[in-house]
Image (cartoon, rainbow, N blue to C red):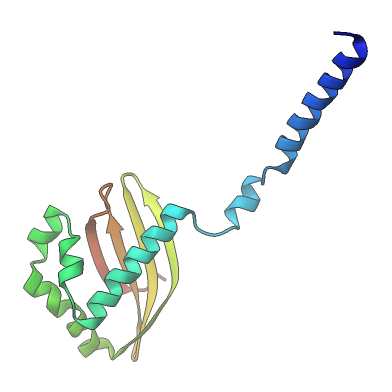
Length: 142
């Protein structure tokens, strides 16, 4: 290969590598693009569970409990959770400010849940098998 061809190939390779390196988004840019695909799925599942609870349908959420949750919160007690919340806090209105974080093997989804009289934090924890390992409604952290 002559020197002109070698220079052309080298220039092409450098251009290709430069194009690849400089076209990649930075960590800061990625961080502000919103939740990843798995985070979006976790939020969607948490929203679906909340929707079922709010409608009084506990079959779907209970079917997605892990073994410990099924022992700790039997289906008949689960049916009372949301109705008791509405008795104390007023009618459910909305859920906003959805967030996801990882804690070891768990994915934790939180949201602000607005009732007529108060706002609570909804916190639901999924294990590695996407089963519900915890579900809570508690006062907002200060």
